[in-house]
Image (cartoon, rainbow, N blue to C red; front, side):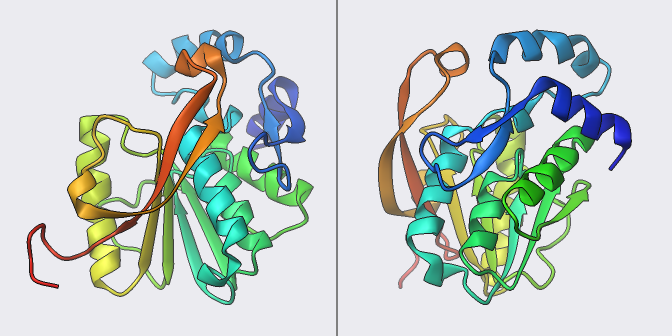
Length: 222
């Protein structure tokens, strides 16, 4: 994690409670479009968009569910994929996870995760890298918030999550109705009306579901 990335997060985001999970505080952008436009040119030259600066609906729902059901992660090794701000990872750590690993492909997101974990007084191991072609290592619980937003990402993510589930991990996903979620592979656990930035989602509230991945093929005998 570079000092420049840490400084960028501190400069462009303010520490504040998450609307739907006020137990957690994150560095969040006050004005989403301004920060998005600031980084857009960099995105075209390989810098990812500032997903880390916002509490997305899928992550908020998943963090709420983990917070309300700490027994799912307590004493277990947790992997948070495409962690963004680290919201879900922090919720797992607060709920008593034995270890939490948060993986991101954006160096600024890794910096945000580290800053946010520190602000919430928890330990999260923030890691820079793309692990979707590998496996979940020793994770007993795999969490992923709002990751089915593109067809290419959805294909890679589903393959990774299926490998993790078939290796014995509990796999939970938070999703606000993104187009590429393969619903036939999941079982609904809970649904929430989650407040979101209107500038990003064109609505103020999104109905968001927490799902558990079923590793069996669709239609297979249970």
